[in-house]
Length: 234
Length: 259
Image (cartoon, rainbow over all chains, first blue to last red; front, side, top):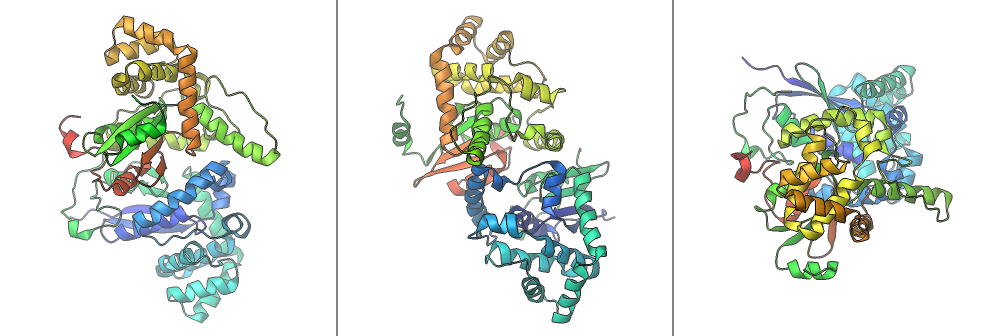
């Protein structure tokens, strides 16, 4: 008898490059592992405010380290990250509110498109140094992801309704209730309690906790072996 | 043994890299250190342990931010114990709560017997590690071959058995557990409070800071072109990739039967 898939929630914001890494890694594994991956578009400034945490970019040394770290990680994980030229303006002034509201609307109306649209928004901000705040930018990402012009426009209109704004707030609060202080935050629903993991660098540990086979960061399926049925001890 | 960094590098140049691991007897810092120790006889590396003082690094890093905000060159006295700073993340309860859970998972995953101290805040903020780090610096100067063992015993006290590491008899107990005689342990303890040792600890800590450290553990890999700096226990697989070495997880094959 097949085991029920484990539910995994990924709380993310396209403003966060580390969220992109976590997202791509989990997307690589969602058809290999017996998991039900649920993407949860959230708003990182809301999480930082609620937890009293500070964006690493605001601590000079952490900011410098992050630049270097991302250069290594883009090659290591094969995700085409490029730091925006005016990094601080993009992160601190422009932000991602409209984009995350749009993704929330997509999640409510066309959840099957959420992965593609999220990826296109990341490609804009974190690979091609393009805007994600203006309506035309968001529409462009949506169309590139496969939505028609009409669908994209309709979703954009919905983005500014209270229903969507409240849903984004609700998802962000849910992350905070799990104890999130930053993004990406992954919540693994284990048998007895949820297991909360921060950051994109815990995939191997996650595999261990779920008693699943880790096939490396690039998910080399030619290494696939029968998955262990050992139950995790957590 | 050559004392300047340039000489050390050229001395070890025939090996593929020289790895300096800067660490303190603190929290999950035990993890990357433990993992690197497991790999030091598997990978073609020369692992050099550098006992450093976390409180000073966090303070300096926070001060840098403060100075940038207010200008000028205000200096605040480096704390003599514990960790506090403008942005000390330990003040943030949510991170603290997260850390407690995460360390349990990491301990199991990495097969390191971590148990969270009951009074986490007291241990990290009020008690600190200055005496322990001075002692390790003293060991590093006189008996470098014992540094790994004594470090491990201090970690076991604080992070596995919730025992003190600040009092002289606590440090002596760890030293004896590691294999020192009582006499040697007492002599090293006495040496810990000399200017030579205090300066050496400051020097190591400043070196970490010069590499851009904002916390510990910080690993500096001396590659062919320039040093590569990594923070925390989550970059060892990346480090393996850059070194062209094979990552076998936190418990490599060679050790599986022995843990």
